[in-house]
Length: 100
Image (cartoon, rainbow, N blue to C red; front, side, top):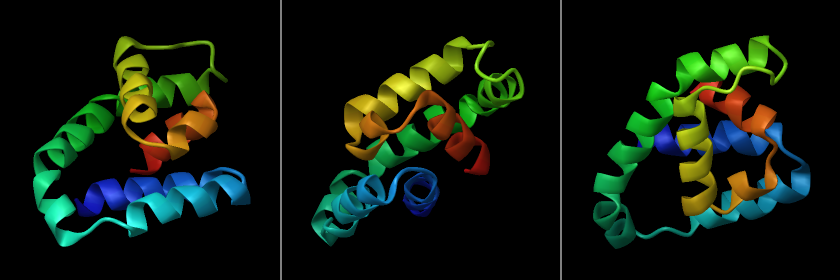
């Protein structure tokens, strides 16, 4: 849970201020009941994101020309399950994955 929150905090810093505000609002509103219910998906978030780190590094180093399957899976997962990543570019998300 802490890793996922840190990831989203880093992502919020890398996108436009308006996006960061709305993104921070989504994670700040979770209750303890919601946190315990989503703890299984949080470990899934960590796994998908951590597995994409090498692909994210290649993507950033190649200025977006190299797109690995694990990075694609992480980008898709983040955009489907969280509001903020829908508004962030692929490069911003890849950099946030590296910082995670």
